[in-house]
Length: 145
Image (cartoon, rainbow, N blue to C red; front, side, top):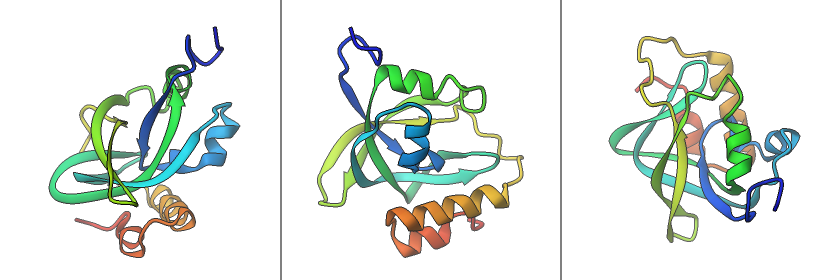
């Protein structure tokens, strides 16, 4: 039995916030694999202390798909700062225009009254540019909708 789950089976997960940073995931002891640029339709990015996705018809969020084990996901989302996030199924479009099912962790009821953290938004914009998300999307991060 693997320390990262009973069978080590990997699950595709769509990341859209600071967990898009592969180095950060590795520092947390995870072994992200199969990195791919991706986008999810009909969601918008909302930033407060952290990022979450909210339903938004006609909008699109860009990010990365990584493959992780259930054990790695459990460990990642056990941290008190992110343990309110819950997995949801999404359909992600890859750069080659193919579609794949993936998990995506979101806050169940994002607090629309919370003020956006400009430092978080700046860090997320820098990361999004570094990993190659589209320039238009990068510029939109943290902008009022």
